[in-house]
Image 1 (cartoon, one colour):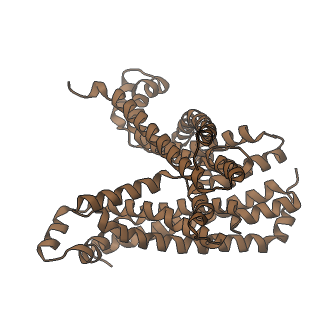
Image 2 (cartoon, helix red, strand yellow; image 1 turned 90 degrees about the horizontal axis):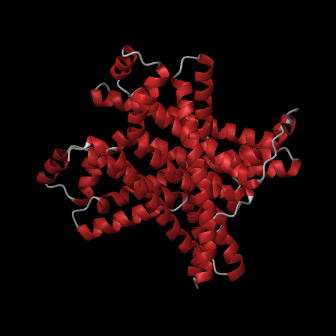
Image 3 (cartoon, chains in turn blue, red; image 1 turned 30 degrees about the horizontal axis):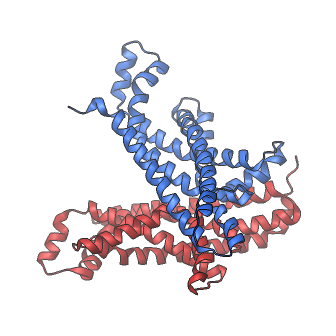
Length: 216
Length: 222
């Protein structure tokens, strides 16, 4: 039967899920923007390198990618503990998806605005941060949040290298209680609540970011 | 660093078997989940508020659960109800169950974009229920959401790697078996990820061809 102790144990696992996913989002969103900048920039070598990276990482299952990072990187001279390896793998994964979102927003940005900004004497850098970024950030937010929910749902992949997040916790609990169902059902509810919170937070942020665009 | 590709080459049959299992399971799961998604469409867009709300709730709940958790629910949870599935049936069943929710939602989104006049004139001509969906709505919706279904298939292929955790011998499982036996993790997982890349690239290519063919049909050259 579900008990308070079980719920607390699961919430501990959920904490790991939240921390790892949160760090991956915090690092993955700007990294995705950097990749998108590389892909829309002028250096041909950087453009193709960023495109290749994004195409490869987006086609690889997160489980397999986590395994490649954790077991494969030591061969290249970087040995990581499971937790940092898990965070790194999720950052690299979500950054590739975010780069596609940023790239689409940059591509669809009206070029007239950029030309006007340049005509006013702004450098490319200033024009990007003052004119382009505030608008593409608002436009991309819903899609970025969608990718964040996908990331949370892909995060159980890190269980494969022994990180005890929410999904793996359910197995640990049933190894003791010999009851598989109660922790699994509770975990499903916790995931539902986490995703609902994430989406509600994003709505609130979107509401705030577009406040000045609405007429009172 | 020297890559031990000779070991990978020597174990090529194991990779091929894993890739083969990934391919057939994903192909079967895509077709079945699309079919079940079609069955979910009439209740989802039903005029009956209770029916459509129940279907909506099921689809939303299905899309909130991580794939691995659903795999555990099917493989470890169902035996509590006396339903014991082996790893193959549990793996395939989870792929189908999970993706049915997404396919239903994709089809519904396609239906929303369909001009309302299509449904209204079909109703005026006496179509309703299953015949309306089957004859009028689905053929148009399937063509317009084809690319999205392709993307979902890529997602499905990537989710299938989770099945290695319940020891279904698909591609990631094969790579893990080879790496733990010979201790060649970098080579083994690199080859597996490259194979997934090729596989997903192939699906993308098929989708692009399908899109071109559909565009021709719509312009009346088909």
